[in-house]
Length: 157
Image 1 (tube, rainbow, N blue to C red):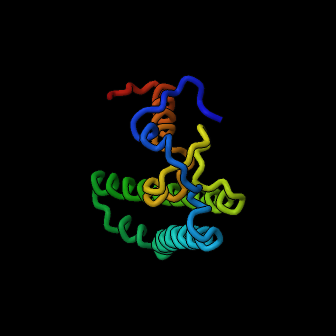
Image 2: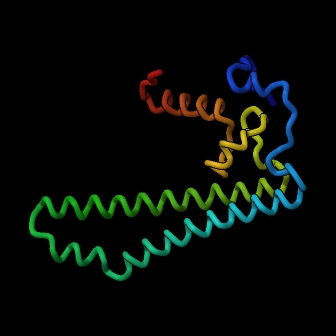
């Protein structure tokens, strides 16, 4: 399903005439899929390991030690900021695991590497950097612009 009114420009125009296999179907099919699955599972395990490490720091009382040494309002603000950053990191880790799980599901159903908006193939370079990408670069840019407009932010180009 192509976006109506979307022009084929730039990299998309250069690749429009090329035919290539989907990222999950390149090479020896099953082997490529298994390699991608292993890579996604390794990334998932790394994120979960980091999450366990952060939680164990919290449980072990590392933050309590900071609280015991706080002397003034400035110290307390640093402690609050540190705790906020830890919680944000845990939230980001949770989001990443959810996205990786979704990528694994798509890999198993054969739709991995296909843009959810325009159905074009997501470039191998993009998937190498962000293996759980759900949009091609052009559609992701469009999505980010739309989100910025919805939030009332100005868009500068």
